[in-house]
Image (tube, rainbow, N blue to C red; front, side):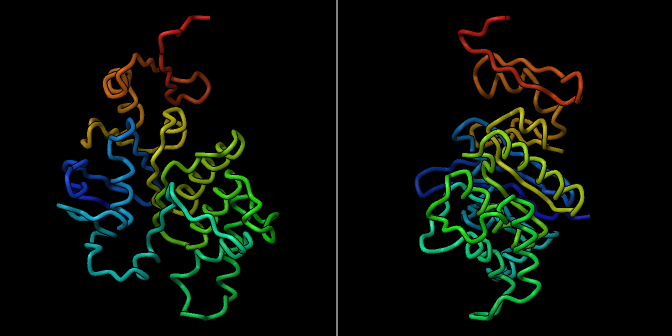
Amino acid sequence: MNPALAGRELVLGYPRSTVVHGVSVALEAGAVTALIGPNGSGKSTVLRSLARLHPVMSGTVEVAGADIAPLGAREFARQVTLLSQSRPHPSGLTVNDVVAFGRHPHRRRFAALTEADRQSIDHAMDLTGTAVMADRPVDQLSGGELQRVWLASCLAQDTGVLLLDEPTNHLDLRYQVETLDLLRDLADHHGTAIGVVLHDLNQTATVADRVVLLHHGRVRAAGDPADVLTAEHLSEVYELPIGTMRHPDTGRMRIDPRGRHHVRR
């Protein structure tokens, strides 16, 4: 079976530099794939190329085994959605208005919302805890609240592939945990293929089925979290001593970076 979304031997860059060198990533239905690595490793660039927002110098991006190049923007948006780091800060709109943007690929131009649209919008707001603020102006929201509203808009798009670039950024601890739980629910119960860029390695160990570790625009390691999140790999890539262990209750990897003032207590 073909992956839901895949990048094959991607070479990516900008007019005067190449930043990603032959990276391959496959997102499977019902699984969470995390892209990790230091700043500048190319993980967000790879994610944006999978969303067709960054040009591919060489290689291909495929949806269900087919090259995305022939797909129109609306057809692609019915299959793949991205929660990016940089999003507009709309004014004069309510939360409900912003979440409704997610239905754009499914609507005819200037058409009113259908019952199916409204159900998708309501469901997305319920999942993200934004239903209680549906009528609030987005101008009045905190950064964390607005982050959840944009996530709801992505969910309302109702695609089989969900891409997220640092989705827990700006969120307090409760909503960080709830967002990771939501990603697992979408993968486990809805069969969504999820690709997510994360900086927090412990969050990666918590949520991911597969991890791709990038370093200087190349894949250093990829596979099961326990095989990728090793002290050897992480210490090399992040250039500081990093210890790892399995949590006694969950069995998941726990990451322990050790700075100059690391002291056993």
